[in-house]
Amino acid sequence: MIFRYCTIALTALFLISGCKTAKLPANTTNIPTATITEEGFLNCFAAGTSLNGQTVWCEASAVAFDGKNLLFANDKDMPAGQSPVFMKTPATLADSTQSPTYLTQPAYSAARKYEDFAQTPDRKFILLTTAFDRLKPGSHDWDSYNTILYWRTGDEQHPHVLAPDDTSRNSMAYRQRIAQVLATTEFPGEMPYFKIEGLAATDSQLLFGIREAGKSYESFTYQAKVIGVSYRLEKNGDTERIRLADDWKIVNDFDIAKADSTLPKPLALSSLEYDPFQKRFWMLTSQEANGKLDAYLWTATSDELYTNRPFTLVRDAQGQPVHTAGHKAEDLTPLDASHLLLICDDDRGRTMVGARTRQPNQAAYTILTVSSQKSRMSLK
Image (tube, rainbow, N blue to C red):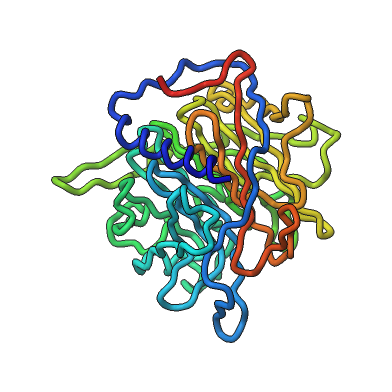
């Protein structure tokens, strides 16, 4: 266990010192294999934390490694003085004696129900999206559920709201465009309800993963759709802003059941990430039905994603699907060229890691070791 943490910490130092000269490996169409090499619990806050007289649970839904720190987001509100967004170093991931650093800037507490982080391939920007799954007609009360934040890597103390202007407090300006892209013959014009659980960034596009779409949060179908939109960096003196184009479109409509009919149902998208080391996309699809929690890992090259070809199920060396039995993996982040960190949102379940039982202030995590069929990929 200690060896693993040291390995991750050394990787972080290597990335920081070598990012200017590192060369990424050439793309490959080989399907990688993966193995679970570590599982544990992350302590998100102190045991016994409560809000309005109710116990607060850590329902961690997003994770990102920025090359130095691990960033996490809890999709529930937190007491004053804390924050749903926090950081830990890789070496203290499972160290319950080391408290996280909470990001207490007002923007982090103003947005609600975080779902996924993304990092641009050049590692210059981090983005964080909410679910966009709530809207109150005639009121602004739920606008905060429709927010995308971003900041310069390492400058998480100064987050910006992704919007067409510099004064908006949320990203409501983009909600209707997403709803219009998701329109169907059943719901012409625009989709009444949808839920975002994935966010990935290429060097020119943001990609949003859709988990649910339908009439309402009570009447929907599970999805694994990917919507793309172009972005650019706007500079004005020392100020930098990310601006979106208006070319929203569905780039991939993945049918999970058709890709593998042997997997449990229903499964739906719970994370989408671009891996600049492997130069491929990762997708998590999770299940939360009748008390059963699980998640499966899939992958696709850029060409496969943008030509609407299906993702490929990732398997271990024995050919078995890689999945997080008993845990609902909600997001993942590359730690280096051969390791992925998955964070699990097990709701309020007393899930297990080995003989240990999850406490309300904890979230389960999994580390996967990823290998190419031809050869392990690494920075050179």
